[in-house]
Length: 195
Figure: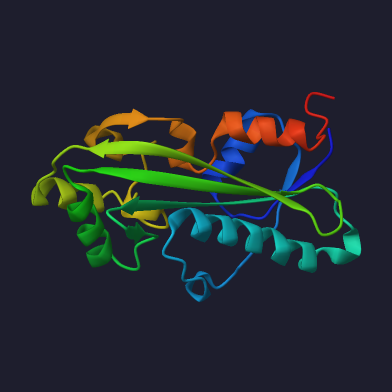
């Protein structure tokens, strides 16, 4: 199989790539996410995912890479977007706002397949119902440090699963890579998966 450059330092996405047996290298795209100010969560995640791929295209231009993949995940509830918390206090505030409510998780994926000026971008969305959590439970969770560097201040694949009442849609959307959508994206773009 052909190598894919993963434009992300996300350990979760790397785990998925390993699980799928995809050969890959990691070239994190450090983009300034604050420059993108869409209020529509789908447009926001799509632009962030595309910008990560564009940045890595520029960084690796001399190598003429064939495959580059980037993704971005955010949480939205009642027209508010929850990105990565900037501090423990910010994380506590996010968890308090999500407590006892349903929210959307959107992951957008961008794939460059070597064709000049073409990046395929797709999004997946699921609904997550968060059970009511007390201040003591929030403090307990914050002490795990799982809240760091994740949208909405929680990791569903960790202890935050204790607070998730229901998920409607692909759980991989919440962990940063909806596998079915990613697999179809690879096939649609001619990636020789399994070859």
